[in-house]
Image (cartoon, helix red, strand yellow):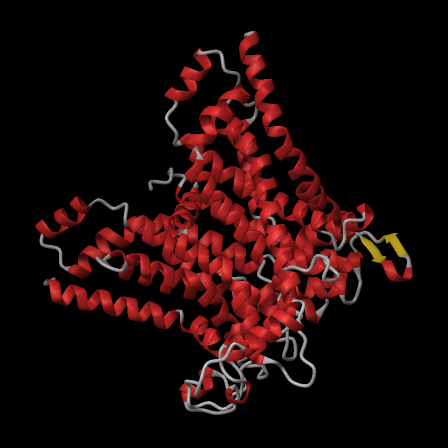
Length: 290
Length: 273
C-alpha cells in the first residue's frame, strides 16, 4: 500500500467517524443492552435488579397475552401489507397513465402518508365515532361501535394503517412505471398485444422487483407499528388490537417491568431482523434495475 | 384513446384521489364547524364556518408550546443528521474504505432497527445523562435514528455527481475536506434538500421516543401533545381537529410546495441499491 492510499483511507475513516460514533452509542449499544436487560428481573420502583437467565422468555412461552399479541401482530401485518400492495399497484397504474394533473394527484395521494401517524389515529377516531362519525353516517347505519367491538376494532385499525401507508407503495410503483421506456409498449402493440396482455406480460413483470422491495419496507414497518394502535385503541377492546409492540411498551413503561418488557422487545427485534434477512436473500440474486 | 375520453379519465382519477384524501378534508371541515353542530350529522355541511376551535387551541392549550418544541427539535435533528451524515456519505461514496461492503450492510441493517427494541435502554441512558425531557435528548435520539437513512440517501446522491470537478480540485491541490466543502456540497443541494425533508418529516412525526423521553411542556412535541390532548367532561372533537390540522401543517406544505424534493428522496431510497 502506498503512503497516498493509506492517507486517503485514514481520511475516509475520519470523515465517517462521527456517523459511526453516533450509531454505535445510540443504536448498536442500546441494541445489545436490550438483550442484556431481557435476561434480568428489573423493576426499578422496587429496586429489583438481578440476573434471571432465560426466565422472562420461559414465561413468554406460556403467556396467553403474549401469544394473543403475536397473533394480532401477524394478522395486522399480513392484512395491512396485502391491502397496501394491491391498492398501491392499482393506484400507481392509474397515476402513470395520467396526462394532466399528475402533480395534484400526487399531492392528494401523499397527504395521507406525510402527516403524523398520531394525526391519522385522531382522524380515524372521529371518523369511527358511533353516532357522529362520517363512516356510520355514510353507511346509514347508526351506532356501529367500530373501536369498541372486539370483532371490528382490528379491521378498523388496519383500515387506518392502509390509508396512511398505501401512498408510499403507490409512489414507489409509480416511479418505477415512469422509467419503463415507451418503446416496450409500442413493441407490444406492434405484436398485437391487447391492453390486458400488455399489463400482464410487460407492465406487471417489470414491477415485480419494486413490489418485492415495497413488500420488504411495509412488512418491517407493520411488524414494528405502534403509534396507530396505541393512540387509536390503546390495544383494546379486550386486548384485540394489542400487538407485540404495544404489549412491550405497556410492560416497560406502565407495569414498569423493564426486564420482562425488554424480552418482548427482543422478540420484535428478532422478528424484524429475520424478516429483513429473508427478504434481502430473496432480493439479492439480481441487481436492482431501476 | 381519443382526447376527450382521456381528459375524462384523468379527471376521474383525480376525483378518486380527492375522495381518498377525504378523511383529511373531513377533519379540516370539523375544525371549522361550530361546536353545536359537531355531533349533529347529517347534514354534513355546517351552517357557517368558525375559527373558534383554533382560538381555543392557540390560546388555552399547550399546543402552541408543542409546536415550538417540534419546530426546534425537528430543525436541529435535521441539521445534526446532515452535519454528521454528509462527510460519512462522502467517504462511503468516493473514498477507499476498509471493509466497505460490511459497513454498508450494517447501515442498511440499522435502518430496520425497531424503535421498541432500543426504547428501554435509551430511556435508562437518557435518565443517567440527565437528558430526559430536554430538547437535546430528543435531538440526539432522533438524529442518530435517522442517520442510517440520511447517509444512505446522501451517498446515493453523491455517486450521481460527475467526478470531473472533484478530480480537477484534487489536481489543483485541494484537500478532501476542501473538495467536499467547496466542490461537492454546492452540487449536492437538491439531494441535500430531499434528505433534509425526509429527516425533518421523520422527526416531526415521530411518536414513540418523543412520548417516552418527554414529561412536560418543556420538550413535548406536537404528536405527543395531540395524543394527550385533554378533555374535561367530553371529548373536544372540534379542538382536536384544529390541533391535528396545526400538527399537519408542515407535512402538508412539504407535500404541496416541495413535492419534487420529497418524491425524489423517497424514490432514491428505494430504487438505488
